[in-house]
Length: 131
Image (cartoon, rainbow, N blue to C red):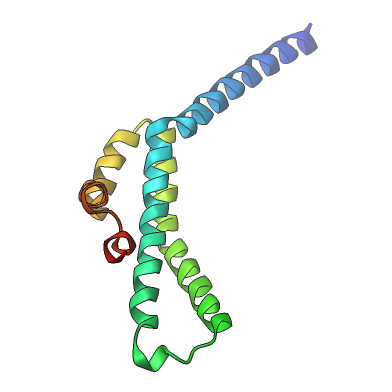
């Protein structure tokens, strides 16, 4: 009888765990969370591209080999990735605790996502402007 009660309690505990895991999973699959993660990724990619484009356009960088240019890109991507790791992790935590909307507003304010999106929609990227 004691063993049966333990098994029943264990089954109930696993049901709770599965329910919680499904809830967290659905939060991570939500369009809002995916959109915020995409915006963070775009922000990082745009920052790397912009800095490298400006730096490599300088006369003193003209002689750098393609291999060195790629190495600089990799280093820049790693540095930006580390900088954005905190906001990404915080966004995931906010999603788990039901505070994703509040955190999304903070990210919008910190990184000016709305203005960035608006400038892309209106004028396109810098590359498109130069083409």
